[in-house]
Amino acid sequence: MSSEIKAFIATVQVPLGIVASVLIFFVSGAHATDNGQWKGYHLTPYQQNWFSTVRVPQSDVICCTIADGYPVIAEPHRDHFWINYKGHWYEVPDAAVVHNQVNLIGVPIAWLKVIGDYVTGILLPSSG
Image (cartoon, rainbow, N blue to C red):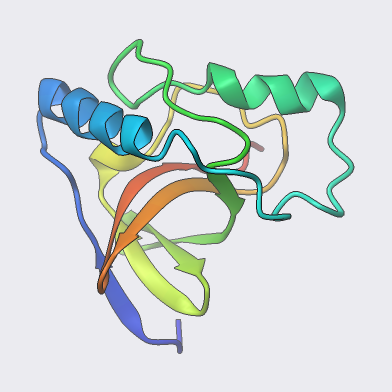
């Protein structure tokens, strides 16, 4: 992790707070489009549709789209995941990690919103 380390903000540590924060995050970003981040992955229609089944950690709320997700480098370090996004490392709070779903794409995926030097969102590690 030689790149600059920045903060990954946990929205709130309770499930209701996470649900509310993620809902606000994704409703405000509903106009987002795929910026080519999945070009080269040759996703099948089934995989493309799968993105819309990902749920907020610790809830049943569907949160995500293919347009909002980005492939990232994710590494476990000191009992937490860290992701590298655009050259910066962010520590991901456990409350923001999806542990109960299979990742059909095979690479770690983060749904992120950058706010200054901070990032909020969720991470689905690669399966396997």
